[in-house]
Length: 506
Image (cartoon, rainbow, N blue to C red; front, side, top):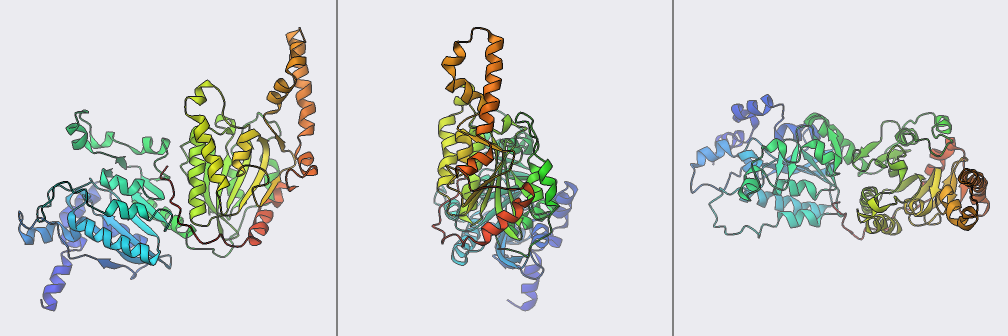
């Protein structure tokens, strides 16, 4: 092959060789795989693998046609740098056979995933596409169940950070690539599903348009998507931010005036408030990324930086279920703790909870198992955990937020107005004084007694008394919280080497 032939062959792989396909993509409001990668990676750093491959359909289609219409077999893959840090990047190309997974595409993916495992670099995978491709006929295939891509991708769980980006239709095998990732960023146009319309219809389950299958509204409310964004440009920007959390500390950033924390929590226990401004105030300005925000909103999970160091934050959100630990909240929190533990992120837990959710309806959600999962995940943390009781720290719910007890975190502190108890104060009075209350015949008098006893009990379980009995380590000025967290973390050695525990997909 002459140099001219090589140049011509390479030209076939570029977007400008297929103006009609690119124009169609742009007309639909999307970007091409190569445009997304160019936006993501540092300029000049991308080294592509398998650019010259074509679909394995040479027995049924002309080679010239395959070179023109199936460049790179529909997946652009290679190594690069993102923000100066090494990374592997892969992107199914929706303009090539609908981004389906072909024989040679799987071979390329497997090659990159083996390298990722060896080099221990993060991975970004643009997962849009229609699943397995049945039209590759160059190699005899019966079941195709010997494809190793999914096992190799899953095996990287807990080994290297993996971020999936989804725009448009992402079905079947492509959806598995997204679902097995550590974090999923998806656009407003995304549809994720374990099967596309053809497979659903083939199973006799009805006829559906692609847009009806796993739309973004569904996949954010049910917790599949970690971060929802408007479009691919925002998806790339958020992905860069997420990758930055995994690449080590940065110089300390500016922070908000910490004095405002003193007025952010209402004194009345039954007054709900938004805990997210507390998270953003404690963190370096502009560093917070909220995860699974619409799923189990009673528990906030976020990645952030405090004085340049990545931390994970969990926080009870009292505007939803009063901040109680529901089955969904426990699942959300447990999986997030696994993620932080796998990649060495200390955890800050902001506690304001009445305890575990209770009642017959809650038990129908398998509450016993799900809430216990949060306790198990917290107890298994290797990274430092810091607990801050903002207002209410009651019962098993508070213990679950603190890794099992107030003595499990490396530091457990409370704000001055906080109360800590074995259960909600009124419930404790009604249970502990049951016989005495039953002896009061007048219902109104009985309720007045409950209120009086509850107030008396409230004084006994104030944070200052918990600190006096050394049930917690200290009571602090809310304005000092960021400083205390940073100083505590600076005294903690790095987490021990990873034992390569996998991170649950859920």
